[in-house]
Length: 343
Image (tube, rainbow, N blue to C red; front, side, top):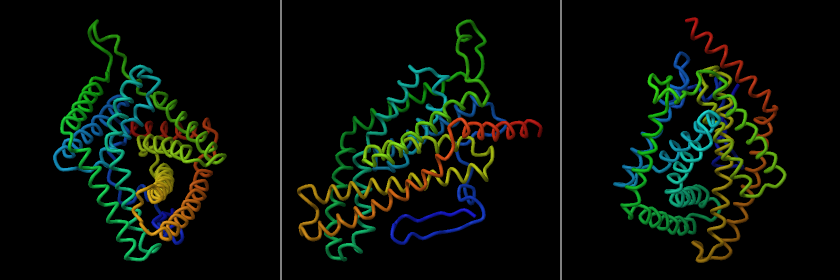
């Protein structure tokens, strides 16, 4: 039986149970998935182009009417995850160049995303902590701040246009990734990524190893920067496991769902910390000092519970040595690809 936890209230989370992993039930085929009989280099190029096309479309929409900056971020994060999983094969120079471009685009809406998250959590938690009247005062101020930040981001039309051009140019470079050996003297040196698990295995093991190390460091010193770093590493691993999800959906779907739960837990903890910081930073959106004190105490209490839950999840995810983790995934992959070829 698989369990999904609603984290909106750390005190009384609602729990849904199912006999199939939530990553499988009702989920349409992910655009991040490799297909069993698809050559690996072709699949990786298809996936990255799909994500970059989504990001470019989102950026164009954002330049006109605000758009969904969260969807843009997800597409760019997924592309960075693919870059990391083939880092060894594409070379360090190519990796660093493309990763820096994607990181630059991700930073564009960071301030607006933070303001939106702050408003969302204040709206959800404020009435229970402060009462309807005081909570309305808080959310009204935060809503104004969010609108101001988003308007300031979008006001620079040249900036958003440059972002579209930057990601579109990056997309063109991804489209030129070789997927088969060159046929002329000029292109013969452009070796495609081998169609083998070893092409992504090193990246998967590295992501698991880095995530395990970040988890242990956060467990030792649960500082905000350590938790953010751990969340980032876990997010990369989730997107990379999504790549091979079809190798064994019933098992890998459960891992993906658990990594999603970890991401949601750490993201909520981070958002509540940011909200507490905003409330205590002059000029505070809460005029009444007693209300400030009440809400910050409650936010810190919830953050403590969320950190404890995240560490419990982390102990299950990072139970194995990286070599054993990679060996399991390699076995799933080999059985899956052999089956598809035989069909």
